[in-house]
Image 1: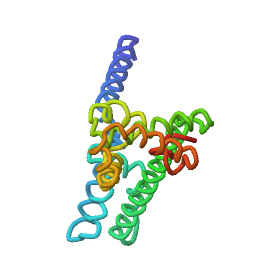
Image 2: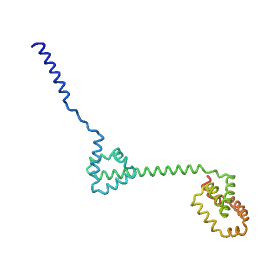
Image 3: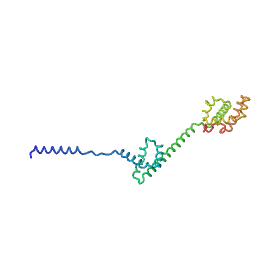
Image 4: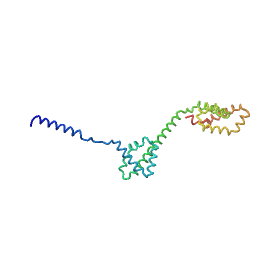
Length: 222
């Protein structure tokens, strides 16, 4: 065979091989995430249809997780394992309930911790019950009470209510107590200067029993 024919055959062979490589169809690898989405969609349709227990359990979990992150959350926590279960509806129901109670427990624990931290902060913000502080707040309590008897609203709301850390409910209780003291009101109406005597008596009584007479004592002292 001539050399030219040999070269021609070789070139043709190379071209044929090259074309054969180009015509091999690419292997299609399905996206794993899409597979999970399809599996989850099928599982939800299969288990929620005509099953109010599963639907209600799902709604409970949705309230804690939120609609936006729901599918990714349940997929991450293993709901797709229910596809292989003999009873997928029971499996999904159990999954929803377990996740719901687990999250609810976590939320409650978090709330308790936050409340405990808040209580601790409040406790630290209180002042020490030294003799000087007790004496000072006994006198301030007396002034506070006299202001209520005298109906000095401006001084009560701007000075004493915040100083004594009084809520509106606390103030309502204190006002009611003072309002029902008809005898003291009678004395004040007859002689307004008697408020100084009331103040002196209150301080004396307060120093004897500060926990009872200092207004809002337990929210002020530690």
